[in-house]
Image 1 (spheres, one colour):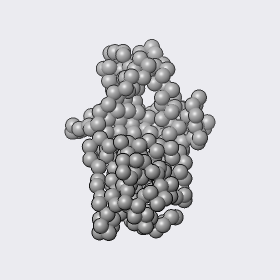
Image 2 (image 1 turned 120 degrees about the horizontal axis):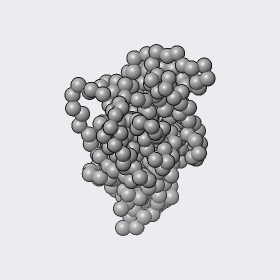
Image 3 (image 1 turned 135 degrees about the vertical axis):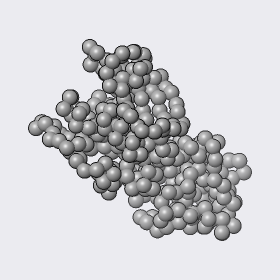
Length: 315
């Protein structure tokens, strides 16, 4: 239960820790929680330090539960491993390892100092990795985490003859929530020419608007507010990562989406499936050249639609 609580605490930092991950921590001794904490903002104390300070002397001989491996390097704050050792923690349970080579290795350091360490497995470990899926990809692969969103009919089409929308109002609102939660949103030039989309987050709580991008050779319409990215996909994603873009929501049509999938650059699929049969029109993906296996498939009712979520690359 303590790791589950740490995952809940980590979410309190969502939106304020960027570019750092969200992290939660719980200190327990003799079956009782004696300290809790989460990483609140960049440059502020890490979750472990907050929880240990809250526990005080009660931390000595206790167990620290934390969603991300304690760092062992000096950055904007001292290494968390030093705080763990100074507090006299006897056991550390970690939900996920740190993918950053410069900060990883905290468990080995604690084990070498005679602290009992445990790395979680199963569902909690999976949840912890997904909680920071964008940051993990940004750190490990030097590119943004890419989620491809499409609204489709039951026969896999992205248009319905005679109808402006494929999905329902609740699904369209969810898309605006998704936009508000990512660093950038992108379409291809086909979508730009057809719809000249705004790609902003509207009618939802949005602390900031995402960067709005168009991949392709252009030119953009004179009144478009999108940024044009005309280089190879891998190079453009690498440049976006260097500029701090950790997450990219791809809303392009089948041509752009197929190019991204074929290049191995889509990590997650978000398919809003409407209870309709189109009977005609383009499908959401073209020929991929080879089958693609999916993991972690989940279904959620969103109004009259069903949101299918699946990973091509698990974080």
